[in-house]
Image 1: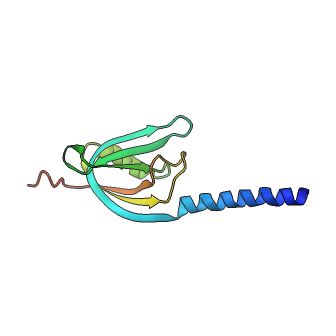
Image 2: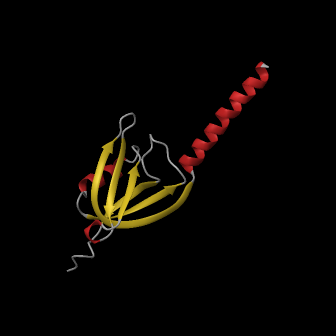
Length: 121
């Protein structure tokens, strides 16, 4: 009986580890988006995560919400610096997320400042 119970517990732990590894390391898609960076916040009660929004249309008609992992400190600093400016972000979309990683499935991996298409010289 103990052997069966220990096998069941080991199986549940192994499946949980495989699921976590899949969610963390396997990406659904990768891409680039651009727009005006309108929000970057660190929020949460139990686990603090970095969350942001980019306005991709005139008057905020289309909002792209994203998360940033704590380990990407350079990206976080650039986003703070570019607040309110037009930016281009590289992101990875995951199949799902965990509450301690972020609120969205979109995770920013790089950010660059861009010239706004609305104000061309």
